[in-house]
Image 1 (spheres, rainbow, N blue to C red):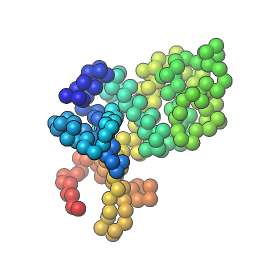
Image 2: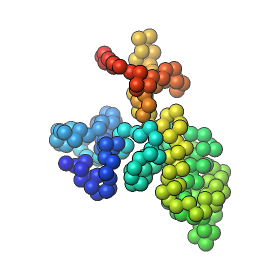
Image 3: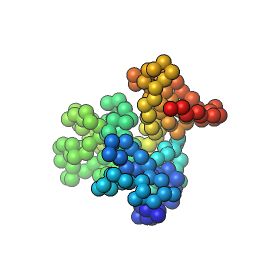
Image 4: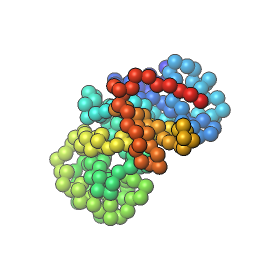
Length: 212
């Protein structure tokens, strides 16, 4: 099984959170079904490109057992932020950026880290020199923090964000207005014009109907 090969290569034990996804010719994302043959699912998408991603977000990623699992969540959330799926404030982006740099480079060392060293990394699409300078300033304060601790601090911050782990899908309401249905670790949210208009927790959802 292809997914098992990937899990083995990454030395992952907590595999239920992850999957392989691909884009169809119309740029729609699909998750590879491990129970079906790969070639039957990838018709018309040659050349084949598969992306290893978090499929199911843990409500509290800090409680994941394996350090390597938390690291994969850390990498995924960094991408979510960079690609705009997880919006954050400038202040938080500076703090998260400092943890990411600590994870990647370790302690700040003026002999190794020349001015502007943070610009080697991309954290958000609207990254500025001012933000990079703030990240460098915060990074200097993290001396002694091991990479795994920096990644844990990063996840501790992002897990509280409203859009953490949200998988958005456009839907048409009964009023013929477009909404976005967001699947989250804690339940389902409904957005209209980027504003939350509904929040339903999994324990309170007994039935889900599909019509279309």
